[in-house]
Image 1 (tube, rainbow, N blue to C red):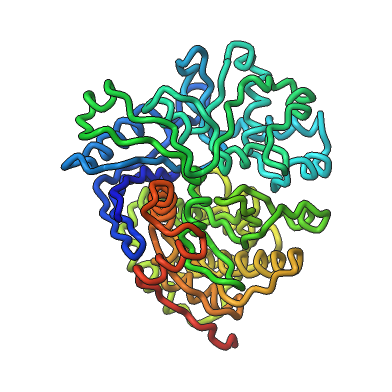
Image 2: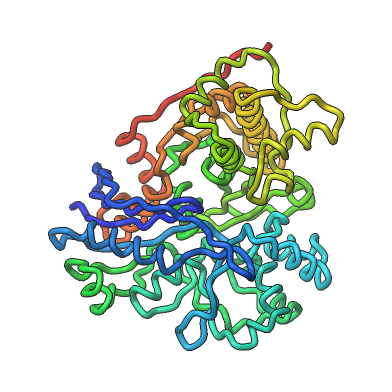
Amino acid sequence: MTATVAAVDLGATSGRVVRAEVGPATLRLEEVARFENRPVRIGDGLHWSVLGLYDEAMRGVAAASRDASLASVAVDSWAVDYALLRRGSLLGIPFSYRDDRTARGLELVDRVIAQPELYARCGLQRMPFTTINQLMVDRERGVLEVADRLLMLPDLFGYWMTGRMVAERTNASTTGLMRLDDEWDAELMGMLGIPPSLLAEVVEPGTRIGPIDAVTREHFGIEGAPDVLAVGSHDTASAVVAVPMEPGGAYVSSGTWSLVGIETSAPIATPAALEASFTNEGGVDGRTRFLKNVMGLWILSESMRTWHAAGERLGLPELLHAAAAVDWAVPVFDPTDDAFYPPGDMPSRIRAWFEARGQRPPQGRAEVVRCILESLAEGYARALRDAAAISGQPIERVHVVGGGARNALLCQLTADRTGLPVVAGPVEASAIGNVLVQARALGAAPASLDELRALVRTTHELVEYRPRARG
């Protein structure tokens, strides 16, 4: 038996819809739609164009439904961002996590609860954009007084398709409002003045939410009557499903952000994990993604945007080729530094970072690109060393999935700096994990995560990079 399913896979810079045929020994994907995702700045801040994203996604689902064979569809996206609703209607346009209001939210949370106590409750790395911080700004603005429901963005799309409001567990675990036992933390919400009634019923990946309603199918031209399923709706949760790892494996989900870590059977919320800034996020099948957020290829893409605005027309392949030819040592910076979080002129920020420490900054485009990639690779290596030490799980191999798997120089530098073999691929890991969980729920794919990962290994070409001696 095989099943035809569609993944709506939304990233912070682009989205795609993938149609897949999945069976016990079959995993074939076809991208049927790809579209940009660019936040829009208006008077009160930076927002996501959610209606445009939904329109693009549904047109993609319609394309995937050709011949009426589509059995189901599921949505995954980046974490932490959400919509507030009242009686089923949006209350404003969802903010982007890169809006600068998040710093105010962090301050408001800190006034109520100390970070060690909060970490012991939710196990999340201290990051300004976490949902709990954003909600405190909404509370201060009075928005929570009129809202009666909060939905994470994949759950919002599911609601618009089916009329049912739920909270998928892996994404719920990124909010800061969920305890380590996967229940909403009503006590914490009481301390913060956040109404627990805002939050929907938690469902597991693989849950059937409902059929796409007739009005939506007719409007977008969706053939048949596909169901909407919950998957690991945090895109990293879906990506980790598709990491073709075996015992001893670690992962780097490399895209706009880099999520670097291991899979564990339970959360690790120890003082050592807090000090090393590790986070515990929900995974599929009750697993925990014990990881660290390391700024990702965002730094490179913002640098290129800055150069292009100044008239530079070199593309990414040419810049990577030039960076690979840099055969002298370049300095490295800390890619987790908050200076690299907001949009803007990254080359100037990199230069300022080194000058503030009395160090020579990289010179010229090629050195800057090499510096960015070396810094990311060193950030990955530090995070993996910490993950192994804190968890007691030895790491023997690193899997790079997502867009960074295409970047041969980054993969090689990661192998060099970790001293471990790096396996690159698959690139579209989040979409693959999405369709695998759907197919399994439909009875068309293997039952265990190990078997799903074995299916990825046998159906996708992977590239291995061996560590080189460092001079």
